[in-house]
Image (cartoon, rainbow, N blue to C red; front, side, top):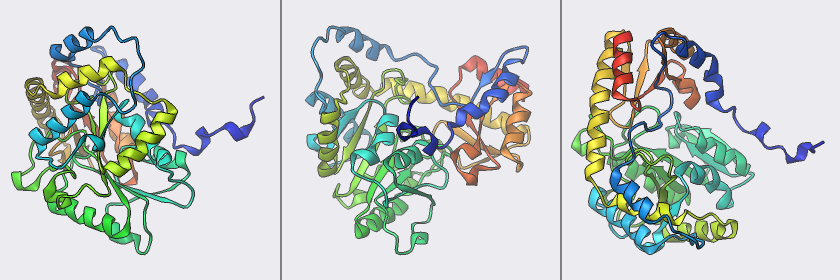
Length: 371
C-alpha cells in the first residue's frame, strides 16, 4: 500500500474540466453533434512552413541542450523586436521551454518559492498559476488590486494581458505601475503574453504591450519575465514550443535548475520553432480566421440575449446572461454547445462563461444556427 506521504494531488484544486463531463455528454447527444467551444485548443492545420522544418530536422540522434540552440533563442529575440518593439534582450535572457503550461506549473518550485511565500495572480486567472504555487507550498492570492496587499510582499506577481479568460487588455500605464510596484518590493513580475498577437478592439494607445517593452519597464529587464507560447499563434499546441524571456539573472537560475532536471526542448521542435517565428504570413492568415469566427459568434450570442464583457483580445468571448454560470452551461449544452463556466477561473467568474473561438468554420456556423 502506498504511503499517504507520497500524495500531492489532494493539495491541488480539482481539475476543472472533469466537472464538464455531464454537460459534454448532453451536448454530444445533439442530432448534429457537439460544438465544443470549451477548450482553446487549435483546430486548424499546422503551417506547412513549420511542418517542412520539422521533417527536415527528423534525424536528431543526440541530446539537445537545455539552453536551446543559439539560433532558436535569436529567433525569439528577433520576433519580439520585430513584432513588439522589445529592445535590450540578449541571448542570456531567453530560454526555450517544453510548452508554457509546464513552465508556469514548475516555475515557482524551480525558483525556490515555498512555504511562507505569497504568489499573487489575477482575480480571474488561468488555473495553472495556482497549481504551480500550491505545488511549491506557497500561498496564493487572487486579486487585481496590489494595494490591497498592505504590508505583504509577494514573491511572484502574475499578470496576463490579453487575459485568459476575459480577453481584457491592460494598458501600458497600468503595466508600468505594476512593474514599479514589484521593483520597489523586490517581487518578481511574470507576464503571460501568449495572446499578444490576437487583439481585436483595443485602442492603439491602450496596448497591449509586452512587459519587455521599454515604455513599460523603463529600459531595464530587472525583475521581470515574459512567457510566450507558439501553440495559438502557429497552431503548434502538439509541438509544445514556448519560451521565457527577461531578466538574465532569473533566466539563468531557471536554466541551472532545468539542467539538473534534464528539461530539454527536442531539437526538431527547436528548428520548427525558428521557422514559425520567422514567418509572419501564417499568423496573419490565422488571425483573419479567428476574427471572422469571433464576429459570427459574438453577433449570435448577443442576439440570443448574452452580454459580452471585455473580450477585446485573446481567443475567447467572456459572455453572461447575469445568471449562475452552470445554468448558462446547461442551457447551451441543451443546444449541443459546450462552453467553460467562468467559475473555473475564479469566484469573480460565477456569472460568466468562456466561449472559445477555436472551432472549425463549419462548427462555428452550426453554433450560430443553434443560437
